[in-house]
View 1 (cartoon, one colour):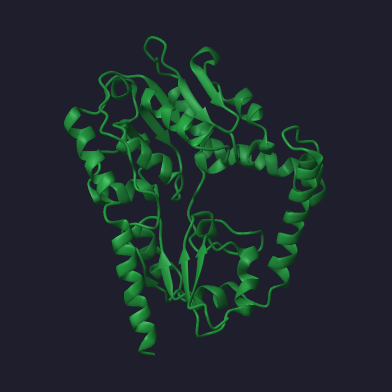
View 2 (cartoon, one colour):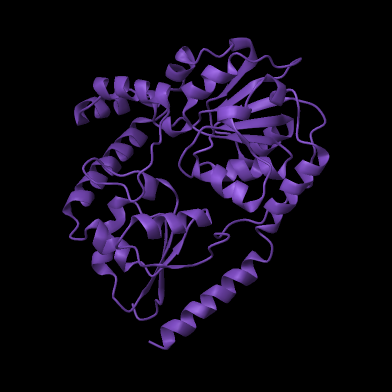
Length: 342
């Protein structure tokens, strides 16, 4: 359509590559990366950014699950036996997954064709733009909203934790959380009073898509662990953070940034692996964040962020979203001006 100037992709998974068969060369393409679209890929396709995503214990369990469900028939059988879906939902999900596989292998556009066609790229973290430029020879996109992708303006008031409380672990039922490796460390520590480990696993398809499979082998103390297995409305989920003083995220790739920034705005002490993308970026920005590798210990869990540290993180996190509408409109206007000069 001549009325369309810009085509905007919020994530660019491989099953959407076929859409580029229909995009005219005169259109401007903007891609706001999600995470899985650059770090993961269907079998037989190389991810755009290759990282060692899994720690030792998680690697071992992945091998066990892959050995037990390596073909399409097994995956269909597991889907049909899921208790959390209606028969209509199961059929719809099955059709969607089969359609994805069909589209991926029938599209005339290769990964190189698609990525080289993108005009502007918005990473979740600026460091990812540099990584794409360094690692992907056919990546030619210019930066758009490099310091802060589109999103909601945070509304939290400043909150400093006075004493240790609950510990949040990860954000979902995915292997990228490296749950088992984190559990091996945390299960040795003692939480005070009525504090608990809170583990969100309401979505994700790791461990056969069954949270209980992870729970059984977690080694976490049952009386001190709360598993969030069902969907929680946003406001109720945010309320949980009021009772959290520490949070541990085992992701190596960029993931769970919404949860991480929610922690940083709420005075929560955050731990990440030293080789994680989030840790490298947050340290570069000047946040007080800590390493799982060498700083996650009993003494550290017994101490919250100081008032000054918590306020420092809060100011940095809130400032990211200041004037976001004005900045987005300004950068879009610049894109239109450059496009008109072609």
